[in-house]
Image 1 (tube, rainbow, N blue to C red):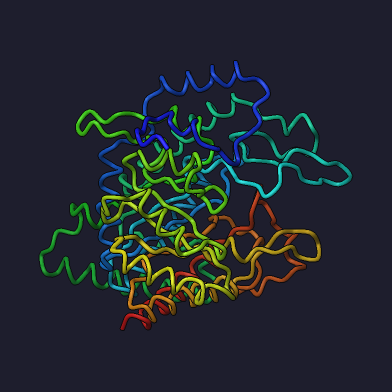
Image 2 (image 1 turned 30 degrees about the vertical axis):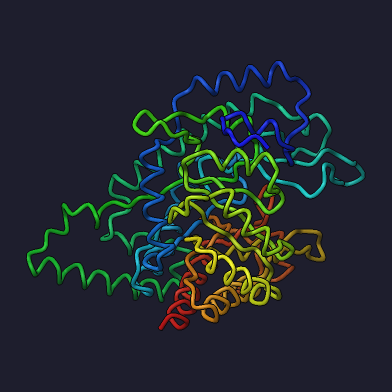
Length: 450
């Protein structure tokens, strides 16, 4: 294997999950356009995130990575971005207050447009159609023309990501994230629930702490740590032409960075050691993630660690386990032990969503809140047994009051799924379920590390 890395060296390796672009001239034109556009994020921001993730790897912070299963070109508005951010901020406040450690906030946002699929085709009614691969590739419409990959969507994904990033920066630095607004973050449909009332009590305690600080002459109004937050962006680096087109060489370090997001990850379907995705991400300076499933051998995980982070830089690599609730403890423990013994300073995160998806009787894909929580509990138990830090969670959620995942405080059942099933791909937790999950997670981690 050629060990010399370039932004295009991935092309020498087998690339899974790539669209079958019908017009390569149009594809080349779109990629050329993207390569001339400004970066969406900056190398210094990616280095800041890596430093914070280094604290997670050391057991001094916690990673919250959350957002849409797949962003939509159609459901795109300032309100939807704000509501997703609001839920992430609420969850982070709960975790920080309950666990007593900083929470590193990374959104599945401003670039999470592509989805891997288990089959190149899918059945829609009586038709066998090419699979919907996310709005960066094609449309979910139930007819053949909609499923044709369109390179112009790559450029549209860039522009929507840029707009989303601008709004996120305005919200996080412009007062919306001010800690004195924790009461205002409680949405109406959350505030009327048991977990919403629990959150409101926590917000009141924070208010009292803020008043105490002001009484002690601490300037809470101008302290940026109380008024602003850092929320980083991430997505699965699936469409490699898009990622290469947005890769830039940092003028300060001469290191290459994928400037489509602060953090990129490789999915469980694309982490082949000799594959194009591992080859591409091994050479960029961003912090990166890699998902590992129940069939991933321990030896392969160790080889991935060596390939993706040979210098053993803390915060460079996050391993995201997606084992399934029944398998997580037994499957994860030998991996934890082997990676720790090999001296790899990884961030350990749990994806409790993707290993627990099933089809309800009405044909809707769904997940049950109790099973999601069960996988998190098994993840934490495995870490407790191996004396390692359960450093993060990776979940799909929305700020909307959707009915896509079952259970939770509202005890959503199969019959509720059609009420507000709005996802374009996988089912997401709604705001109420997300907040409940934050409280339960904090309790599990606190009890395991006491």
